[in-house]
Length: 585
Ligand code: AGP
Image (cartoon, rainbow, N blue to C red):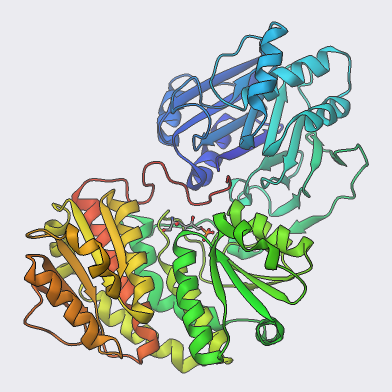
């Protein structure tokens, strides 16, 4: 995680760096910092909290300089504090570094550096890189030689950018696994974790290949492998999908994205016929299919598995990306790995894709953000085409992933499917005011449960995840039939339970499970096409074909989480401790 940006320019870079950080904030927002080379000295400012805190402090005493780096952090090693915010300096203050990733062997390196007299000022893994570079340059090595030496020392995954007092017209960037790219401008170059940081300056970008070292000047860029071989440079023109998102009249990106769903669902069908056909062909060819994903993408994949089973007659397994190693021995050339990731940057998914490729399996990724590390690692990619999702909570990407799975399982892209879904999504959004009121009641509860059966089970899991991450409330999604195998003991008088129960083949059984909860004093909130005397509250679902119910049901639960978070005064777009892209393991 973490967002990093560095720039060499003809103009002062301070304000620009802060603006760039704001666009990278989705990668982490525990603390932020900036370093600018001013009057032959590296000046550093760091603050705890989101980038606006840094912006306020910086405005009070800005730096003047044409070279600088900046960072927005998602803490891994070292607590959330000013001293652990990046950039970090070497002992003499000659080297400043920003980092995204994890340096696994930092403890031993730190010990060695301390034994050699280096003084550490933070608890981070990152700081070792600044001290190491200071030593390497101090021993007379060139920038490239010093960078190669560091790359040999560091274990883990990292994108590092160094600014150097004694080399004011150069920066060093080192990439291993974590994404890093360079925006090629007019007399200025910008290195960052994401093109969003520099799109307003240039749409020409060089994506650094894995295990690359870049020596970056204002007008020149040289890229090398870790063994010092010069790499050929390919600058590509970035597509319009990189345009900067706008909240428009909405209070938060999350609610804007919830409301966008009826409009964007049809975009999922805008696939190149070739990629869709290949996807279908591979599904039919493979002897084994594993769907690999995390979080909401995992929940959409559970639905995907059911769709593939029911409509394509194909068995697949869904694996949590962080647990892929338990099945990796089955990844071989008979195997298809479907990697599902909104960001295309989730480290665990990327690692699974790499392992699968090494073992000869075919990898197809389903992504939204593009280009992404995941799609570069895959044999083929299918995009959701729904525009940037900024809110940390997945909303429109979840429904789009589910719909894409449905279309693939059916084997065709039917525009009328999207029209039917659009109508139902629009209708269910009309309950917004009622759900906002319901959130007042729900947000006072200690625990909230979600129950669903069959296709609706994935929505129980997803509904609970939304409430956890947005409102910081304890919530659990359960398969309806599992209730009496333990969780029923948790039901007390007034415990809210959302019964996700459209009139499909699971209706009667699920209603019985709801009644069991009601009989024990629980508060029953029915999400259904049909009212019931057992429901304390009722959210009416529009009638759609059975396979679309889960997609439609997810919307009231997104709204519930959003309004509960608002009632509880939480930071809806940027929930604490989370980040939009999880680029560490
Ligand atoms: C969802 O609301 C979460 N913020 C999170 O679980 C997310 O779905 C997960 O981190 C996977 O992200 P990806 O789709 O970008 O791989």
